[in-house]
Length: 399
Image (cartoon, rainbow, N blue to C red; front, top):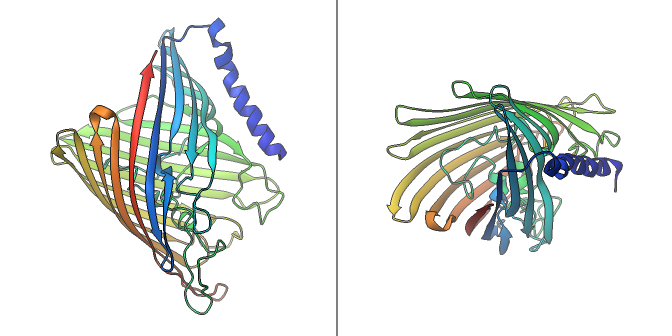
């Protein structure tokens, strides 16, 4: 195990120490256990081979967690959250050569926070960075099948190269759906310290500083294993005149040791819902100074991704809303210079309110090619078509 991973483990454990000591200081007056199971059947056709997979839907993966909070008086609340992702054959890991990616158990949150009514919230531990989710604003309520990170479903499926260099089956060295289409979100979950301001007229601001050794340029910069990420997230949520508006902006800078190639991301998204009709619209845009994986250099054009979604919430059924969304995504320079990916999709989610569940289905077509230039060969790939049918159930218990 690398030293960086050991340090991360120690930080996760240290983040839990205040929770372990809390019983001697204060008694939690609200404890909640919760979780969800999200399983699906995925059919993926790469233009040569069509295969079916039973997967855990990584768009909103199966998980189990607990939250506790206690009032400290004077408008102050102490909270703790511990959450694990529990999955088997995740939709982002299976591919043409691996239809059962194994079981996984990983920490999603190990976090303590102190919230003040007047001063905001301070958080320490493993949890969302300040710009996490800033690419993903949506009011369609179709996150299991349709939102800005379109690579969450069938993310491990590889495109099949066509033309004289094409082979009988897609190779694991070929770009995958996830390489091309994973949303350039502003942040993720990491070991970090974070501050959130109180909400003011619908606006709130978040700042965070985190460390990680998950360096996407590690293959090129072998010594650049330790990175620090500073992030800013600006959020706006408001209801007015029968409309709901949700918008966010994120800025991320990743500083790498032993190299002057620092990574920067600028991200924004917005969503609008007309409450009376259920019609909704969302769009996202982002730029990233470095491509996916290794081989990116400072002079490369920035990677970028755009996304637009049109949805409709309806009350056809007595047991919950029927939500439909169509979307389009485009990416550039994500894997190679001059490359371009396009995605067209439609998804339907049927809510089952009394069960705390939903059933869903979607159909999506994804295209990818490399235009080529003086330093990059022209490459063509077959389209990938994916069909998904699944169900998600949520459960919770207060103590």
